[in-house]
Amino acid sequence: MSTRVSSPDTRPLLGPEHEQARYDRGAQVLSAVDGDGGQRVVDALADVAPGLAHHVVAYGFGEVYARPGLTPPQRQLVTIGMLTALGGCEPQLEVHVNASLNVGLTPVQIVEAMTHAAVYCGFPKALNAVFVAKRVFADRGLLPVEAPTA
Image (cartoon, rainbow, N blue to C red; front, top):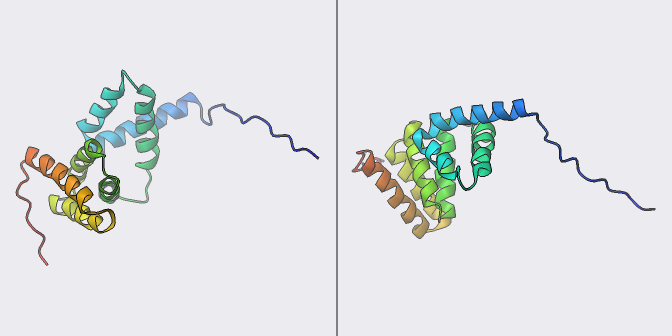
């Protein structure tokens, strides 16, 4: 007995009005979290990968960042830890260090997240991340960063 497999339905799951609403929600979240930094990334992709830019806004921010389970500062701590651990993501890390400050994290909290990540991903990746944070802090007049008190 043979089993016949039909072709998958490739129609969009949501209509264009839903996609536009998701993109609009994502653009609002992106602006609130990343300020101008996020829009600069979207603009930089416009002439080479506008579809990717759309998905970053509509899905990344319109769906994932808009979820209610974590606060914006908590989301940024997770993102900082992940980008630190991945390494090689320094441009994205710069955007998210700025975003972390925008949503209320302090330089001490950001550096602590990177220091914590060093245990799991290694000192070279954590050092690279801290140097990205240092540039952002310098640009925003936030140096020196005070060591946390015990």
